[in-house]
Length: 217
Image 1 (cartoon, rainbow, N blue to C red):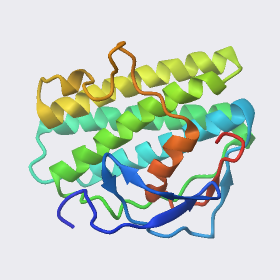
Image 2 (image 1 turned 90 degrees about the vertical axis):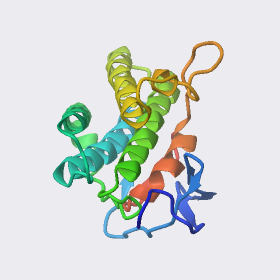
Image 3 (image 1 turned 60 degrees about the horizontal axis):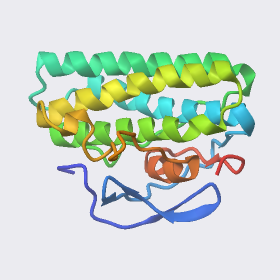
Image 4 (image 1 turned 135 degrees about the vertical axis):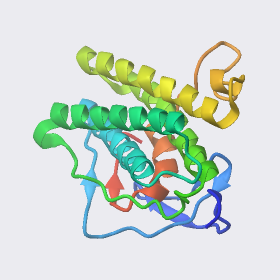
């Protein structure tokens, strides 16, 4: 596979509803779901935290692979950025796991078959999708959180995720309007906000573990 964009259209079941999956304008293939694992996010604040935990697991796994197998031509400076982002995502994942305690969903099985980790375009394009999706997910989930301590923590995390989007965009396009949020910030200066029901289908192609979120969508 030479780049990030697959050529086939498939439908994946997620949260019990069939949805055509499109990420950043590209239709992604269905890799199948493993029946060996299963996770229900739950409801209320726990459901929202597990939702964030699932996304942070995905990002941590992605950047860990990126750093483990750098793409062709990766510079020392680029690897420095990607390693920093990896460390942040692992810290977010571990923080949420600790906060959830016994109520945390299990570790998720990921599938990055659609990503060519040898290609700079594929890796950074995927990183751009993940980071912008993460920001929109936290923005959209904020209204669902009741515990003010959890809300403060989510606010701290989303600000770091926003830094990541800018860093990845600068690697992709240099110092540009896109690095400042063009295409994601509206005319009122507000960033995109997506509900769990909008975010989960976009993350689903990369997650094998069956996940249900009936209480959040």
